[in-house]
Amino acid sequence: MKLRKIYFISGILFTVLGSFISNCVMAEEAANTPINISMSSNSPKYSKEFISHLVKCQKYKEESSFDFFGNVITPVVIVDGWKNGKCGYLNYAKEIPESKTSCSFTKAQLNEILAVSKKDQNVQETYNDGVMTYKADPLSVLFTKYMNDGKTCVIPK
Image 1 (cartoon, rainbow, N blue to C red):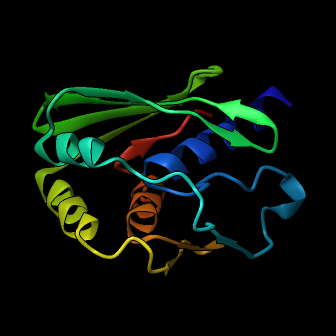
Image 2 (cartoon, helix red, strand yellow):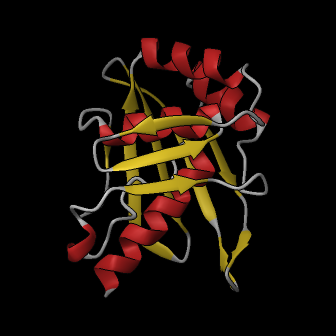
């Protein structure tokens, strides 16, 4: 149960930070069932300060909070600067510190994040990872893609 909760919170955090519920298929029986996920227009969005620091890979920490079905979730995002030629990034729910997801973005990926951040974030785009179809704002779709590529981000197991 604790493992399911970690996966669930990790997914919510990624929604806040760029990907929507990359690991929301928690039940084993649902693993082979196609799922469609849509973010609502009132879902948490990325701050301009966060995006600015991320695309420049400048050290930055941001906390926010939102209500999720009666539970207050406090996502923490950290841009950790350049390490080994990649931009370090970490996110987690303050309520569940073991939910930490870490990513290492290349300069090309940061340029892609910058380009996508200039798109209208009220327009819904889709991404299919083979199991689920995500429908969300362009940044969330891009971050979901990075979360699922197996190279950019490490999600807690």
